[in-house]
Image 1 (cartoon, rainbow, N blue to C red):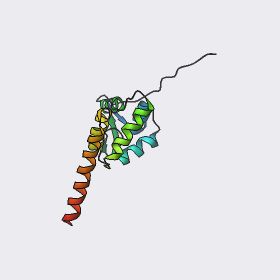
Image 2: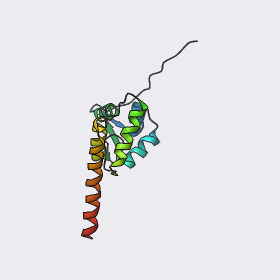
Image 3: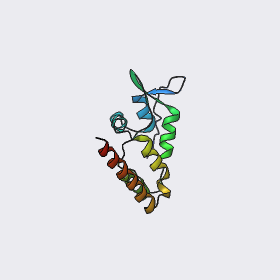
Image 4: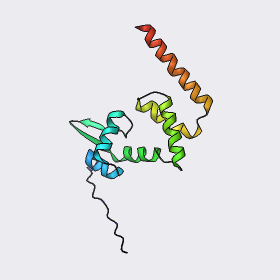
Length: 125
């Protein structure tokens, strides 16, 4: 039984930029998955200047932030991010980076703050 390892070819500009197809290949994702993450705000940072570009350091940072030791921990992180009710990538990334140390009290505090902001925005209209 011979195993062959193939290394994908990734094209990168000298400044570290990659187009969406190469970024997806680098991250080990399908291009459509990366596009859906871009739309929902759950993927890595990108630049849109006519075309979509990703920087290698942003991809590396995003991949590193999502390391877990078990699927249970990954599910806890996902639940914590969903508990904020926010689609804002900055809010989500803060929650994701602190999810391993989140307590029940902290989640209640986040939920309370979210409810307060919803209430104040509805009072303004």
